[in-house]
Amino acid sequence: MKAAVGFVLLLIGSATADLAGECSMAGFYLELGCTPAADPVNMEYLAKLVPANKTKCPHAFDCPNLHPNASVCYYKGKPYEDKEMIPQVLISNPCSQGCRCQKVGGVPSFECAAVDCVETFDSDMGECVRTYDLESCCSTGTTCGKDAVAKLNICEVDNKTYREGESFKPKNSGKSCICSAKWNGSIDNPEYCRDINCGIEIHYQDQIMKECAPIFVDGICPIGFQCPTANMTVIEGLNVLGVSAKCSFGNLTLSVGDSVDFGDQCMRCYCDVPPIVSCAKLSPKQC
Image (tube, rainbow, N blue to C red; front, top):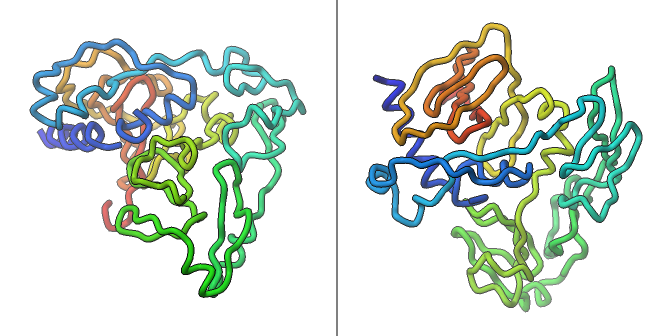
């Protein structure tokens, strides 16, 4: 019964959570080229659990074969041979630069150049404000001096104040934005907001090939992946909405609501939105 209650709470949280921002796991799936699956669910029951405007979230996705050939790298469906570079114009994440396929021990993965931003090492700005643009990974300039900073426009977002040119990520939006004089609270203007791209295929190529599960802590992008182990077991849950799609994880097939036990009290892995299992890493106090 505890597993069933736990899943109901998980369902409410994921359904009301922030398609890439409003729907759980949507950003992850869309970045991999997956599309929402037509999977009928008990919409009448769902409407009782969550607000009406959140009942349109996909409950499963259809994903392409991300690795039809295990000997090469893949990015956005295109194969890359050993030492072949991805054209920079095709990379959606500005912090992923100079990425090339490499094979280590026969396993293909991407290696990218290190991007060292000055703000990573120097956080003391004094009376200066670092400024950014949407297509940059690092700051592109600074505005200094008390009078100059005072003249900058202000954006109030999630109870925080940002100066014109500063970057921010509105909570549960799946967007990265730049404070602008045109800011009116809407995140749908491409002049100052863009979709967050996590670079999943680039930075986790080998884990995706092994069909590992993304691990989330508090944000849109995974912090790592949990791969199948020999001693994992399935804990049956409650498929409240009757979703027919399944999750595949190693040699396991899970229904929505089922979870995977690794013997780690701080790791929670569920079949929440098929076909990929997703995990949450808890803090020691939550375990």
